[in-house]
Image 1 (cartoon, rainbow, N blue to C red):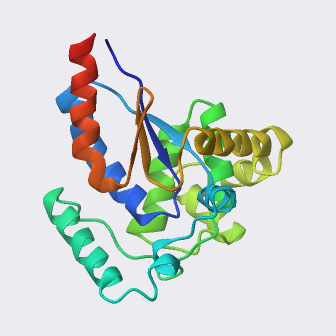
Image 2 (cartoon, helix red, strand yellow; image 1 turned 180 degrees about the horizontal axis):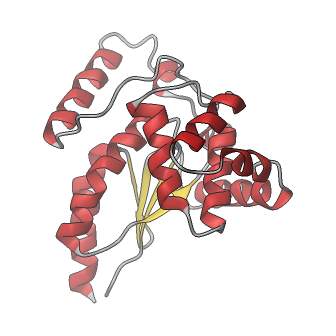
Length: 205
């Protein structure tokens, strides 16, 4: 059986960026292409009464320090050289994620995904500023004005809400999340288990 594998992401999540950098090698090893699914992390948090790690663990001694250490290990393991912390974090990603949905509707999610991540986590900018977003996308060879205009359209807004609600209905509570068939995995540290499940479902078929 060829399993359907999905990667649910929001550009505001540094862990989603890092996971995305590791996915291509998993695709090569398993010969399975991941489906990239844009969702609104802020919407997921509201729907599940969740919060970011910075908020959830702010009062937990040593927790955030350990998470930073774990991130450094992940970066070394996967040889991720371009990552830089965005000084404007947290960034409101509503426009960015609507742009992702609009691009997906046009069959052009891949170049948009690459550009948005570049301007969020490689050459970090304040990507919730419409003028900054427009200029950044123009610089990456995309039509920033078109993207901002489409972000206002009802079909784009509705689609993002629909996909976000569907994710929560399937058990998602944060990003990055992954589905291998109906099996849910959360967090970049679950990528090994994601790969193992892919192989298990391939064998089961």
